[in-house]
Image (tube, rainbow, N blue to C red; front, side, top):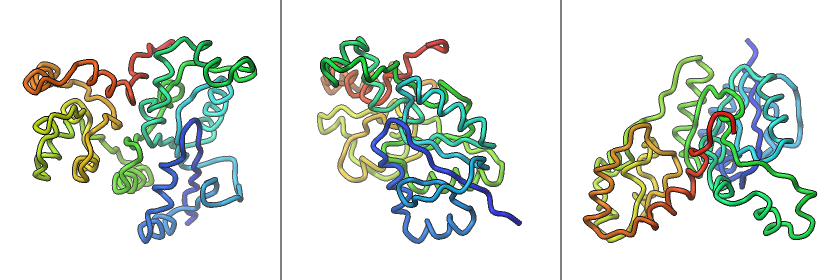
Length: 249
């Protein structure tokens, strides 16, 4: 039986999520044993095919060329997986959406900005249908393996829709708010095993906002510890600015 053909593609991103895949170690060998990787720029130069059983997309969509390219990839792919914050929620590239696009172009490219036309940053699912999501910046490696297994078996994978705080409590972490630091854990989707907090960092909201966050509870915590609201909003917009896009934008 032929192995499923899997291709990795990158759009506007740092390609850190592809490096996470390359750094899977022994797990990567297990994954590669089950699939044929036909395109993966970070680890191979060959391109074997133009039709894919699974296409795995890193990066957000930031210009018309990218729009056309992702549409063509979608047409040639049976299953499409968006992985990494840039692909799943727009990521840090979405911060551009808070500025006038012409002003942003001039700031980056100077007088030659018109040679680099841009559009508002979009997550992949805001342009084409996506079958599976692997959130995070970078991705949490065990979740990628779980999603890929689900995709190859044709079964659903459900991204947890409860707060990172749940995993944080299970890992017996001291709450960052008790340390006087703003943390996005109360409104961010779990699934990363509270990876950042386990290692002494805060949650930056890179997995996306819950579908029904406990806003009043989060506000109570913020008020209790006297965290400035503008600090919280800046942290939220670091990854989640694209959530403000309408369906037709």
